[in-house]
Length: 349
Ligand code: MRU
Image (tube, rainbow, N blue to C red; front, side, top):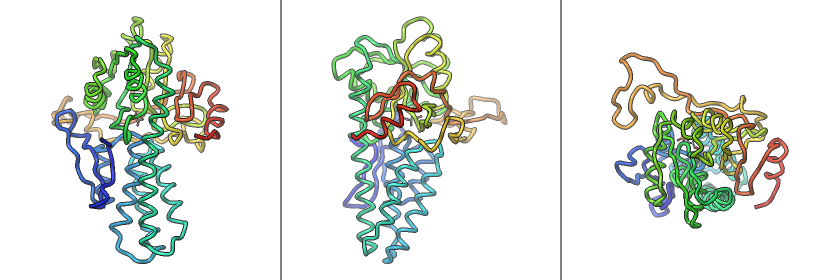
């Protein structure tokens, strides 16, 4: 089942509601672009590749809800909503990438508003279908880096829920498991919204992959006692020099892994690589509601003194020197990233 898909008979989008997992598995309709913006803001849908697809389908929703018969007005309305959509979560560059793909379609000129609507939907659907193929290709390359018997620390949720199907880092782990390799996962709970313990643990149970959940702060303990062979996570944006922006807590995890000589693997589609940004310092870091830190996400129960303040950056940047490999659908990239990312982006496939 796909995390996000277009319902062609009813012309709206169905998504898995990631706020209700693991307690309840529910698919909900998203009927308009403003509703998609809300779903992205509240992380009802989340994960960089899924957010790219949500942006594209959000623009398609805008195209079908806008009743104008004038092609140029329609194109402008869709582009305007695309800008709003991609700015909801500024770190995940897949949103800008998807916006640009749909924007290019808006500029072609089909001769009628209805033809443009169909072309936008086709492109959004292509982005969703390609995501599945891209993830499978990453899983093929990434699973080859996993050795029978590995214990892997995994951060955040990078599975099928974070994409259309399969996912990035978790997709590699799942493929290694399906190849018959014995893998064991230590799931970082991933504060503050617990994507690890709520979502990754839920997915691992579906795939019957053995795991334990650990507190984010426990990763150093496990890395230092020699029980972990690999650290794997995704990426929301990779700068031209290989610096990786990913869920908050990735940087200290990579640092602890590097110190303990455990290879760090970041898995992401080439659409997460942003060559317009030279290094990680230029990557915008989303700042979220402090309440996510001050209260337990699910039932909103307070876990800090009343009136306490909190800071809530959603992502951090791991300098490239701590990253052993970046796995993309085009292959595995190693240092020096400045040269090798450029090279891999220029390759076909
Ligand atoms: O805030 P989230 O849950 O959208 O953050 C997700 C991550 O950080 C993932 O690791 C990342 O999007 C890439 S993997 C699909």
